[in-house]
Image 1 (cartoon, rainbow, N blue to C red):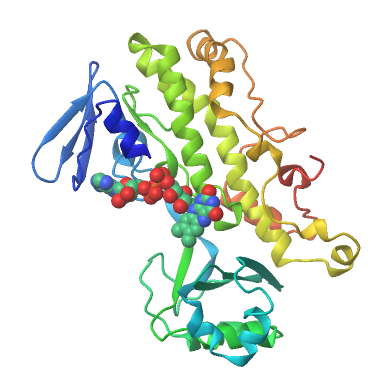
Image 2 (tube, rainbow, N blue to C red; image 1 turned 90 degrees about the horizontal axis):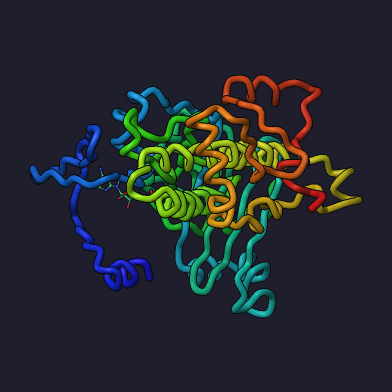
Length: 352
Ligand SMILES: Cc1cc2nc3c(=O)[nH]c(=O)nc-3n(C[C@H](O)[C@H](O)[C@H](O)COP(=O)(O)OP(=O)(O)OC[C@H]3O[C@@H](n4cnc5c(N)ncnc54)[C@H](O)[C@@H]3O)c2cc1C
């Protein structure tokens, strides 16, 4: 859809073009491609994901990846392989959830597992404390089911059907992706404002936020609206307004991933027995009900005045009753280890 729309608007698209470097001056910005070509424009939007090369120009590579302490065994393979096992067939096979898409999760101490049966495929995952044996920030799947089973066994007490499912996994088909963490990054534009980062390039998420793509798309809509409102004369101001409108919201959505993980990994069964909503997953209306483009339209000028003249400005795209507080993984890990720590219900938007 996006390619068709770009073509309709006459926007050229260049495939197989690897960016090696970004640059800017007062009048333009550009990228140097691996094939030796240089491209320039009024503005460069760096949407090149977790290992973005734009970090050098935007924040001098000062945002570092640190282990979050957790890792995820993951795999996905044809459902018919899994359903050949009688225990798996009895739980997820025809007659039970035939033809339906199924998502289930299991809670364990400091861990949780997911099972997904889609049309023709099955996936399972296990979130666990990371280990130097198998965990790596790498998508290559080369591990065997036994590697994951060893971790399941360390935790113990899992549903036999889940364990039967794990045993059906094809050899060499499991990945153990170490969850690296990059602290919230308020600086998302280059010093002269002509290179703007969006998406994973400036904010990565834990999978328990389920929001990386959501926030990447919101960034795109917000930046587009700001550039349209600012016009060609205010490009660098518009990129800064966009960053101001986005940072606290995105950082709160990132924090939500830690809160969800805490809810799942430290389940209080007495509470859940009485109110299963207490272990619900997924963000509330502050995420799903937000109109990011309208928000930019409504707040652009006030945010711009804040940047140029220092007039007060407060974002309203956060969870209800939540006052943004800067945070980083060090302080959060300490807080979460305290026996007094309680998960922020506000971020989960329980009341909404
Ligand atoms: C297993 C998994 C489950 C997820 N589940 C969810 C979910 O449920 N909900 C959700 O919202 N999000 C989810 N996400 C997160 C989501 O996929 C990412 O946050 C999202 O893809 C980020 O989009 P992006 O466009 O910023 O970056 P990317 O999708 O990473 O795109 C970056 C692009 O830039 C290209 N690129 C990189 N470097 C260069 C270079 N030097 N030159 C040229 N091109 C380059 C890459 O090839 C890539 O195409 C999940 C992610 C994973 C891995």
